[in-house]
Image (tube, rainbow, N blue to C red; front, side, top):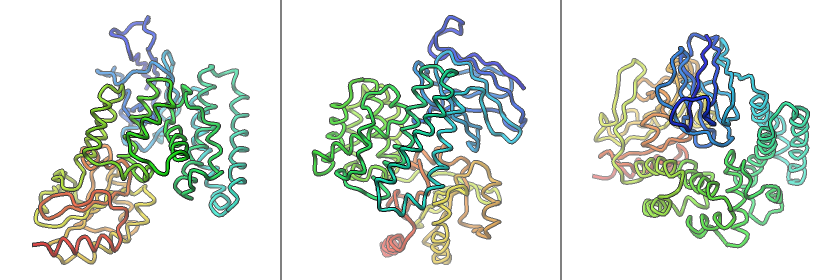
Length: 453
């Protein structure tokens, strides 16, 4: 099935004179896929919903007035393909019989090559990377890898536009920098003064491509901030520092919105900052950033933060049991409820699941405690197949909320990454929505609540 859809992004009328039209041709070889989504990579904002049935979408989502990166995804999120988005692009999308996605664009192909090869390279060299104490050698193997990929881009540069080439070269180095930041900031917890971070000198503060991987620039600013401060003094202090280093107002607004959202949705990546965030601080920041161009991005994550805080009435979600029957949180009023948000494709979730099952076993006959394991899987069969294969069916505790991370449940409980563990008291009030892992500390919290009258 072939569909040609002309999407008017910034103009008021669909016209060949518009500068921001993207022409999209969808060739589907799969009758099971009824629509695809194009999301902006960083904000995950849905830019286009494209039905694979010959109908033009009734409403457009977002604007593309500058080159950026996006992700083409099937509705269930199981298949995706990166794409470079820019005005006037003619995008030919093919949906294969197995639901995988491709485009005919060389720039897109190279972008996916950078993404996939990065993961493969890290996996192949994991032992060398994580066991070596020679940080210089680690930096060197990534520099060599970056050079190798740069040559692949340069060989094809005659078939790329200038913007495509520049973006790909930026993505090449930035994807490597992303891992190096992870390795230095989180895996090794090096101090800002460590020589390992010398690679940040290669990261330019005001490149127009920074919006395609803005976290790297923020991590660089964190390192430099800490070189002149003993610690992160406050969130506003760090924002002011970022502003002092950023010339472009649009980039500054984007960096600030990414930073604020990152603290809320990925607190483990912003441990030095997250401790400074409370409800009043966030309210003050929201007021301060009310004229931020990306304020809607801040508002969305802020709403999730406020609704998932300790002391807030827990959202009364609805989930499905294995037999298809529905259950709501309010059904457990009068019980202490521990919730494990997980998915069958999530490695860390699977690693911790035995501990959750042990917790469920311990309180199986306690009428005052309920252990719920809520799957975020995109389809029920993946969930059931995993539980059956592993012989881990828990008839009472296993529930599913399809695509839970993208549902109201995910928004209200700020489930932006999994596993996520929460504890709710007998009155339906959140005790803790950011438990690190199911451990003895969780049992202590439950026992403490049980002793309350």
